Amino acid sequence: MSGGETKNRSFNGRRFPKSISPLVIGLAVFCVSLISFLQAAHHNGILWAPPKNGGDEDSYERLGYNLAAGLGFGYCPCDLPVLLGEEEPPATEKCVPHCNPELFEPTAYRPPGFPFLVAAVNLIQPLNFGLIRIINCICCAAGIAIVAFVLARQYSIAAALVMGLTCSVDPRLREFAGTFLTENLATMACSSFAVSLAMFLERKDRLSAAFCGASLTTLVFIRSFYVAWYPVIWICVAIVMFRSRARGGENVRSWMLTLSVFCLTSLALTLPWWIRNCVVLDGVMPTGTQGGIGIADGFSDSAWAAHGSWTSQTANQIADELRRDPDTRNLQGIAFEKEQCVRGSAAATSWIQHNPDKLITLAWWKLSRLWEAGSLWHPLLFGAAAIGLFVSRRQELAKVTMLLLLLNSVTVMATYHTYERFLTPLRPVIHAFAAIGVLVAFATCRRLAAR
Image (spheres, helix red, strand yellow):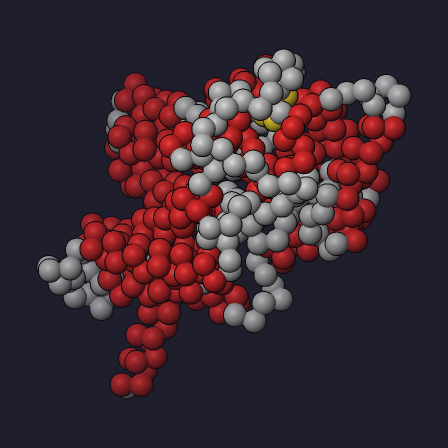
């Protein structure tokens, strides 16, 4: 069956009811998911709560506040008690600078996407944490709805409904729903990118190329973890475009123009941010300092002791060494951050060179934890998804999903794993093919029973 024929047929070959459109299914899935996530956030006691003390959440909140106050992407000295979790953000009716520009310290550690959202809310209603958490729930539900819409349009209504239901009760999606973190935005962006990449590879026109590139740059803008995907995605797109040109006889100029549209739009948000990082760090460090600081605990004795899970132990040791070293103890702010990044990368490189016999085991630990190998119900989910991917393997969305799952796994093995945060944004597409797998298995069992 060709791609065009599959768009309007279900697995049993019957056409969709004309009264039910994929858009209606997508809206229904969005509503059910949103209600589930709002309920989960309320049940977890975070829906109206301030950011969790002393972690990533306080950091994102202060960055968003200072952006709204017009200071830039960084911190004031008086932000330190909030960042350490010793105080709550002070109440205010308007975001005003808490320090002079001379005392303000920029940072290149955090990805900018979520702080920009926090800043946008602060410009309207300062420190309205509930509104930000509700927006996060909406974003997560929107990511699921996007995949459900495509599933209803290209596969079957039943698959879209099953996918929407399982996503709504997924413990990981409900756990991260409404958190003051990047998961919710990243879930929406990852779903949009998967769908738009599949659409681009199918249509190969400039409009879909621009939409796909915009989705990719948004994803990396929200989470710098995905920056490692750029080379592979670009190469894969170039290969597909070249093979399409060879088969269809398209002229070189048109082919190159479409590819250029994709590449340029995929840098629309990230390239200016990379330039900014190089300026504030006074060096060629476009992706900032988070990767270099974090990688120290990706390949270290602390990672080995934690069986592949990330902790900040090695990074904290490097920071303490910098404060004790007479040559670096006076470094502050962005200068300290830069030096910690450089030493973190060097520490990871040194550990790899001295422990080559541990690399395969460490990579396996990261991979098994990413895929929650010790879970009771996850093998069922991933097994059903594998069936769905196999039976749909000729469809572009299935090909894209397999590519992204592979890239995600390799990136984690090559960097670090922390809890379940790196698989969560891909869960909507995993559930989509799990729904297909369940329906195919059910139809097969019914046919065998009938015989």
